[in-house]
Image (tube, rainbow, N blue to C red; front, side, top):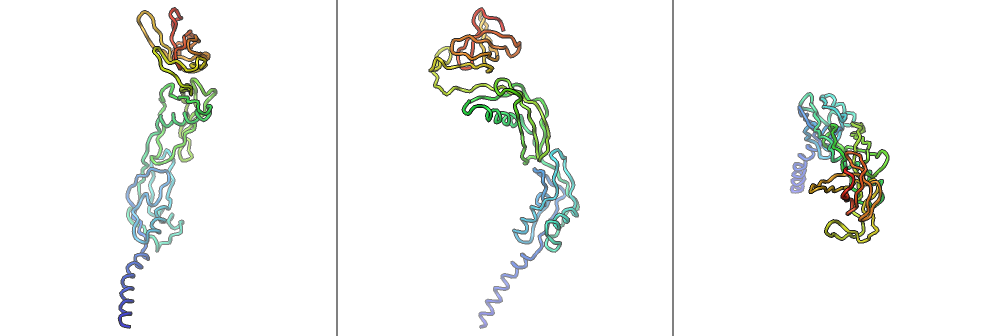
Length: 282
């Protein structure tokens, strides 16, 4: 009987610290400053949380305090505001104790939206609208010169791009950049959409690429093409826009991208042409 009482007393003594820790309040120690990467600021973003049990600490950390606007330079959160938000979340004063700084200066960590992100959104929308397996390529027709907005570093950015008119050749895209439900920028993006490699096998030979099928169209109307111009030992390359479809060896009219003049050129390969000797100077 004595040994049983001894074992019972030992067990109670061993469990007492655990019970005491479980009954301890969660301590929220506010930092004087904090940097956040999202629009929504939580208790865990601005404080060190200790005491109590793991589950309660996790719930306290997730309590939201404030939501920053996408363009916001930051805010200040006071201790009374933290206490009030915890109370609204269902924690009474005896379960959670707020200590530390009287006010927390919150600064958002920011990053700039990149031109690559904008181009990727435009490319995805154009490929969605083009026939499956077209293999088209989408590249910037001119650099993005507008200043792209800054957003919280860890926040999701929504970029929508809609083509205005046609979806091949030189295409203007209406782009909208938004974050946190707020529209940050509307802009026009100009891209070049060109056909990709054809599905039919091709055989590389000297002087260009010869299709396995002689009836294969190597240049299509409104396609951006590369034109070689040779004259008196001088060779240069220009870009232009084909005005009609063309097979290997056929001559099609091409519009010079800079001068906008129409010139005849012979098809020598996929997307490649050459100005005939005696042809009009582009």
